[in-house]
Length: 301
Length: 313
Image 1: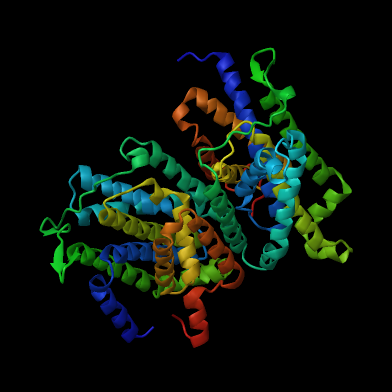
Image 2: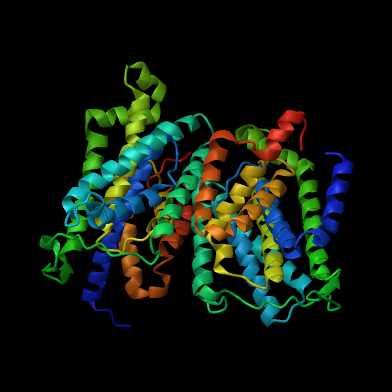
């Protein structure tokens, strides 16, 4: 079979686009896991919620406030949605998750699984599972751009760039700043950090808020590309779990690189052998488990 | 656990189809067996698998396919489903058993998703429609499982019911024996303190793998039986919501108790049939139950009862 290099490049770019979302989401999971020792099963649902906040603030918020002509624009939604979802995350952490830190990790997983079902169930009742399209994409990002080797939709290019920017900013804050050093120290030994006068419970709360805020951000960026549907997070979260298993949760940069490269691998599979595109990441996970059970960037237990 | 209680439960099981709608009881028995098999892992070995739907649904498909297209009798079909699920359990187990806790949960979930995609895309599974019209067939080639008796004006599928009841009792007895055997004691030791069990010379990985395979195989029995009862194997059976459901049944009834999964399965199945009118709000109710259980009710019904009565149930 002859494959044109253009077709491969096109699918690789689309894969990179998906990979950028995998990177943000697995990054959020890793950051939350580092501080809370909890795997946030609700991550997918909160990603979906982020997309819905953008959608609803565009279509329904105006009429609700008595201003039918009002549509919250994309740029505002890009800021507001992570804040709203982050705030919800803070409430979740304060009301529920904080009671679980001394218990087996599994309870955190089960609790957040329950939360995911609740959020998804509510939205499934009011919105079509086949999805609603988001029309608030700024005009400046419409159309396509010539990348030299191919034409590529401007918005997709923008979504790759902004997702990567957020990933690397997070990496920078955690690995290179004072605040990040508190966070890393908190991962190693929370008791000692607290003894040095740092408010660890507050740090944990804010970390969870930040982590789910990242998920919501990915949701808003994804909204104009995919149709916004109550089950968009459900499909995403299982793949992201596999990404996390492949990368290991020990390193921030590891999560980013794993996410991006698996997205591209998925894109490549779409060209070479389309039926396997949905499962290639899972098979990759099996391969990694056989060769390096702790994950590519994970520390051995 | 005293004999009188077992006897009462057994007699209740025998009499159930005359009192309650038989298909409901059969559904209950299938899911109760599924939850009991799952409990062997989470309750007695401390491993949370989030991919048990793969065994339940995978066996349902295999049994359904073999009974429908290869003309197997139902008991051979169920046996084939059980073996296939056990084999799948072995593959899953080899891949996952070295990882613990949440990684174990995530890996089993991801592997189960592969099974889901296979069920969705394979030519023999019927895709979105599932495998329909699985025949109930002739047990041992002699007894027609589809036969309906009319007693006091009620149609009763007694042959099928007692077939399911016997399967359930046999598997439940097997699980009960396993838990109370020396092997079961080692499982509990691993749950309580794995490094210590290891230092005492137990081959922890191999023992956990064996427990995983047994749990997978019996989950398969449950799924295979379900496909004969409902004459259907569908994507719902392999979906990860089903994996979540069995976790909920076990958690709600009481992890690590013998009767817990039975009570949990009864509660969740009843909840579903009572709430079927409210559509997808059921998901919200199930989610809320999860949250409440984890926050305030971790012992489950039977666990709480056992604590009040100060005895093991």
